[in-house]
Image 1 (cartoon, rainbow, N blue to C red):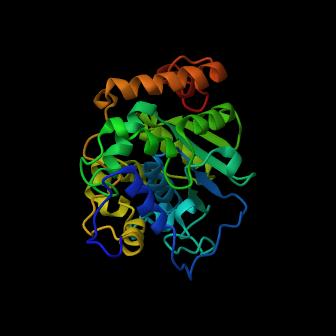
Image 2: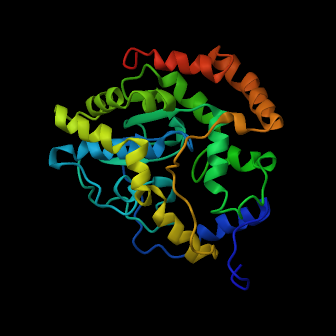
Amino acid sequence: MSNQKPRRARTLEEFIRISSLAAQGPSPNYRPYEPGNEDVFISSWAKSGTTLLQQMFHQIRTAATGGDMDFDDISRVVPWEDTAQMVDLDMQADQRAIPRGFKSHREYERLPAGMRYVIALRDPKETFVSFYRFFNGWHLERDALPLEDFMPLWMGGGPGGCDYFSHLLSWFPRRDENDTLLVTYDWVTRHREKMARQLAQFCRVELDEAQLSMVVQRTSREYMYTHKDRFDDAMIVRAMEERSGLPPGSDSSKVQATGSNAHALPDSIASEIDRFWEERVLPATGHANFASLANAVDNLPGNA
């Protein structure tokens, strides 16, 4: 695309080309991740609350000094391992507080063993709509690709990730493991204070009531939307523009004024997701739909 005027992808083929170009180029500052004691991985599937949990985690671990909003990108202070080489990030650099935290979209089997893992699960149909809203107008020319044609990109799961169903079937069986904090996205948004207490305990960080109040306030949709420039993948945007030829001015904010509604899905896509669930998730979990599985997660001993 270097011989053309910069533009966003209008087809799946162009999207793949742009993404491939973004993965190329020098990364002189990059050093790969090396496991450390007590590291925490926030590894929800794409568009399932990863950014919210990064923010909550970072405010919890910096609460003793009043919290920290002095960053340009939440994934600079809670690094996204899967994209670190593309954005030329040193994964071994000192973090601002302990424990160290990292973002991923991977399943358990592809993460380092012996760490601590925080996972939020979300209705697959909501993730589809949210994923589309995120890419539409950034990687993709706005409305060039209809929702009906977005399934291949949704199944990709984002950089470093896996498909939705592989991710869910990897983490759901770990719901009773001491090293895994499994919640649902909807539960977190409805119970931010309880989640903040639970996450702080999981990370072995003590919070007083004032600190807890700060964490809850800074993880509200209103607060994060007001500060949405900290949650818009600023580092990835720069890499995509420099390496792939995407035009500037992308709206890549992960925090929307309103949530994504599964009712926006075309019937054909909803039916295909239902078929995947019936073929893959129902036999493995006994849950006929996400609502049933979410109810089981929401009623785990730590969540109820």
